[in-house]
Length: 77
Image (tube, rainbow, N blue to C red; front, side, top):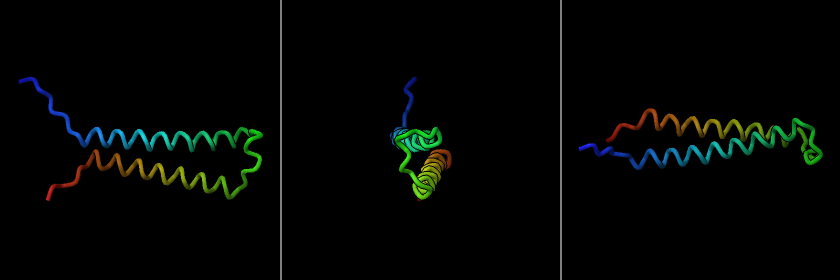
């Protein structure tokens, strides 16, 4: 028939990955801003930077989890 079936779940995963990727980009932008010694980041201390790095790592883990659920879908009961 030539009709291509598209799964709704695929779009949900893609939308979620786009959201997480955007978060990762924003966090990376903050880190880059700090590394350039921008005047706006003078108040950032070591604690803030370590918290930012931890958030970047958590966001990467979240993205990895979403990608694994796409690549290895759960078995249906």
